[in-house]
Length: 396
Image 1 (cartoon, rainbow, N blue to C red):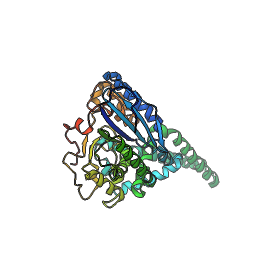
Image 2: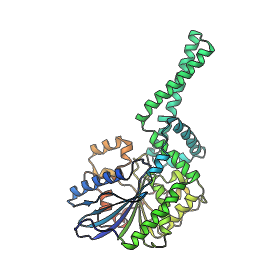
Image 3: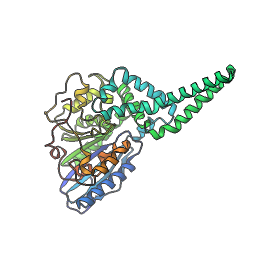
Image 4: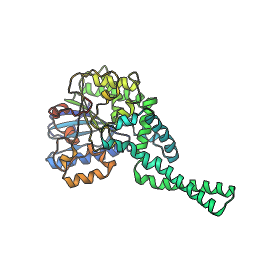
């Protein structure tokens, strides 16, 4: 049983499980980053916040506690950044080859086109890596080859010298590309696409072996200390990992309660589009979406190019329409980040597309309807907080 970390009167009990995105940074980073955001919210709202140190429960399961005047939160971090690091291509040549295979898979059946029809920002996000990485290397190599060809013609070089010049020019092009690509920020997206293609085609065996332990441990803790709300949070590619976790939790015999599931910046279609209805992931996706025990509220910002905004992935991917428990779930809505900032500050935030994708976690400068800190710390359930928002899914 988790003991309170403060003498502050505890009113609302919430258990939070976080499944972060495709990020090699681990639990220590997220504990520090979220603590900073929660403290910023507390200072703005005059809320006293007591955050404990991070504790490792087992090899891949971390926790910390948070107490306020209104609530007590048991926060769990489901670690999978070690899997990310294994699939994080460090060799740019290997990344290049895997990216070619990945785009061939997506483009051959128009999967990437179907994913990116949500918004123009999604289209930029999907096709930008092709320009910034694949096309860059092709242009550099082609440019060097043309230069060598002209030099060969001008100076009437021998075949051996010409071959050596072509070899040296190709090497120079690769080295130049290696220096340029980090500044274009396309490699991170390419690694995500390579991972989601692999997951869609081969599954996620290492993660699937891990989630029963996560779900079993959590179910036991919930039976010992039942919360007022169990909130499962998935961010970015973590929304894909969350589907596996939710399925295991729903099937835990020791847990029969309701689950609030919050998706942020989801990209589930990157996997679901690669399978038919009989695919393992799509079967799990259907089971979770159709469960009457799951209150699903999904947030995607149309100006976030690293997500598939305001699109119901079940209706987009499954040939047989899902049988939802009610008309308003799952609910897909915009977090409307601009509400929490001045126009000038919001423009500044949008300039860094990488950091903008993490805006879901951030505490804005002024009160807004969507605030991660408020959802975690305040004494109101996820479904109740957004009950009056209309479902904005464009394919419902």
